[in-house]
Image (cartoon, rainbow, N blue to C red):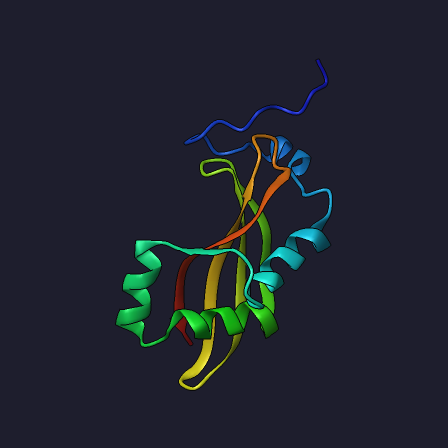
Length: 124
């Protein structure tokens, strides 16, 4: 009793549960995102590749945004995929490039991997 509830994939966290899933070290998660822009462990989804081609930006441009951009939102815990989501915006030749990326998390929201997954992006 008294333990934080375990997130269940496909079930949104209720308001009380969300507060218990704040990362213990936000700066550490932000550092993982920044490290991805410096050549850290990065994976890309097929959705990211498709959107990059459609919207006219590249993975290296996305990594530059992760490295030097402004974190607009995050970390936000996603129980469905057990990860921390970030939204990062930075300069791009075509305007402001916004990248959505995630850092893997454990079942209770703890950061458990130093890898970043590029989910999608768009040019503002």
